[in-house]
Image (cartoon, rainbow, N blue to C red; front, side, top):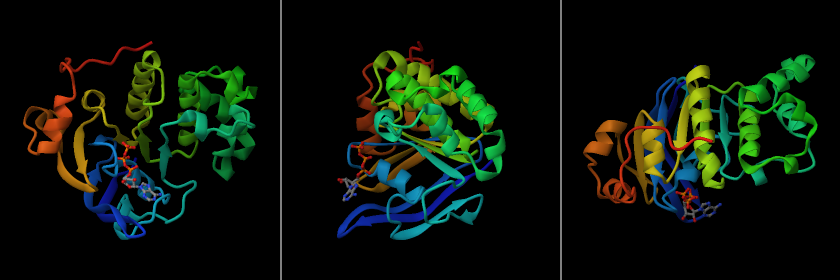
Amino acid sequence: MSSLELRGVGVRYGRFTAVEGVDLVVPDGSVTGLVGGSGSGKSTVGKAVVGLAPLTAGRILVDGADQPRRPGRTAVQLVFQNPYASLDPRLSIGAAVAEALPKARRAERAAEVARLLGLVGIDPARAVQLPEALSGGQRQRVALARALAARPGVLIADEVTSALDVSVQGAVLNLLRRLQRDLGFALLFISHDLAVVRYLCDQIAVLESGRLVECGPTAEVMARPAHETTRTLLSCIPALPARTAPEAT
Ligand SMILES: Nc1ncnc2c1ncn2[C@@H]1O[C@H](COP(=O)(O)OP(=O)(O)OP(=O)(O)O)[C@@H](O)[C@H]1O
């Protein structure tokens, strides 16, 4: 599929520098966890990649080519934290997914919508329903289906389970992991939760005050964290569980 590369990425909001000098590669078909404390710039990095935050320095490349600087149907798709906000309440879930399909596929729209809903574990017969008829976890599945409609080579998942009930978080994470493995997209998984990142990611990158302070293979970073910020984040995991799935429902 695709690789994502950030070279010297910087984002400023007016005079405030939110992100500075970030170099990061998410290799083809792999999962990178981007972690850091609140306000460290995680979401800003994700938004900069899809053109929703101003790239004031550096380059963003997908498969070695510069990304177009406008949001939309690009090779990179972003799924946000809050499925309540990311779906239009007036649009049926089928229409929401159809809207995200590339133009060339419009003729087969209904079949493709049904396929995508099935892929994320939503009964295609529910395509006519409004988001309000769905639970938070189901809405997040629809948001995923919408992102996958564009057949992205790279997916950015920004705290995709944080707004969900704990009881469904594991199921959504398992779904994301299965989709990543089956479809092979590169995944930048943004989270403040190292326990979850450990379960899902091949590589971990740690942000602090907009700068990348550590990056390496998950097992290495977990076993021998080199930076104080990483150690602090690790200390927030109550008791490090074995590398097993968070509880799935
Ligand atoms: N549109 C904006 N205008 C001005 N400052 C912003 C804007 N968006 C984010 N910031 C600031 O940039 C910094 C990084 O924010 P960001 O949301 O990227 O952090 P984060 O690591 O994702 O935090 P959290 O985990 O709390 O979501 C913060 O200080 C935030 O206040």
